Amino acid sequence: MDNLTALPLAAARFEAIAALVSSDDLKKSTPCGDWTVAQLLDHVIGGN
Image 1 (cartoon, one colour):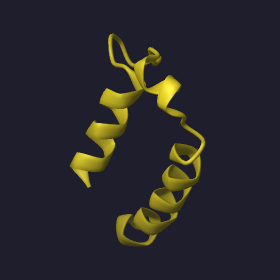
Image 2 (cartoon, one colour; image 1 turned 60 degrees about the horizontal axis):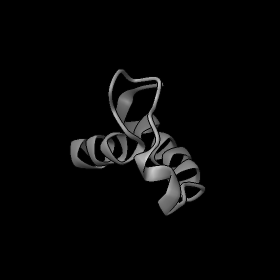
Image 3 (tube, rainbow, N blue to C red; image 1 turned 90 degrees about the horizontal axis):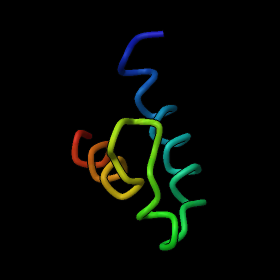
Image 4 (tube, rainbow, N blue to C red; image 1 turned 120 degrees about the vertical axis):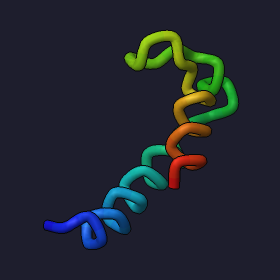
């Protein structure tokens, strides 16, 4: 699958997962080093 085909699928999956995040979750840490959930969401959204 090429990137142009994969992007909308990945975006839909990301949206479904992000919809499960509550405001209380935003300050929690992630497996990505010192990043919080809010920082990770900002990174993914800003990168797209």
